[in-house]
Length: 305
Image (tube, rainbow, N blue to C red; front, side, top):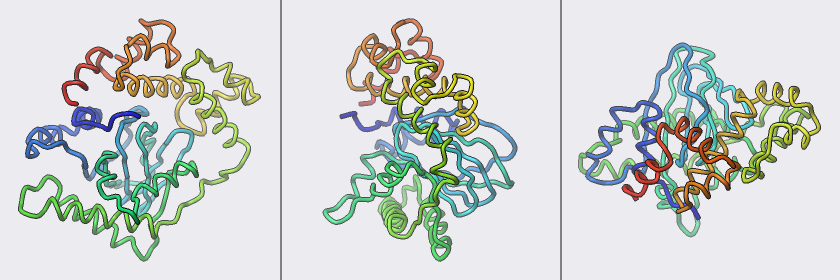
């Protein structure tokens, strides 16, 4: 079983998005590990960061505008009132702003934080289990509850990092209210043409890649598995997901490598178990993706554990 995210991983996540002001607060947060983060983001024009992943849960709520979001093998069109839910180590990316002004609220938290609310009768992680089983990360708030959800998120943002008496408890209570409401009242929106042939092919290609990360599989192997030519599958995968199949495969390999390194595997063994037969190629790929070598990553993680 993998270890839960530490302050180092949270900081790494924040750095990836240049949340400098948030990073500066981490070491001053009463000396505690920051387990839950909320921030409001406004964006104009085109960006965007590459597909990325992290060891945290993420909930993204669109409060204004329209955007297109890519998660694993799906694209989602989102408008005000929509949520995207992302479990740990899932590749995702904001693809484009469709309608401005665009405002979204991002709530990020560790599995430890989510588990701390679990009782005999209530498990707040159920909603993430649903998205996993349905392969659908988009959900929408029922109209009757949109104002309540938005108000709860705004209250949480106002309380975040506050050191005033009682505000930490209020923040946790609003978090619990939000997750309880979503688990009870949110209806999932089926992905358009969810069961059509192209989406089935893309999902099959994705799962074959994920299930064979420890082997030196190629794009040709994946194409043969789904019965398409390399060029046809590559074009279809990029069209439907916003990421090339080769990049998807490499990012999934590196995601697996991070988990193995955190669980005590040597760099050579981690590389081998992720389909990298060439040690130097793995070092270059890892360093390029995470802006640090595997050796430094292990050292940083151990120092924060």
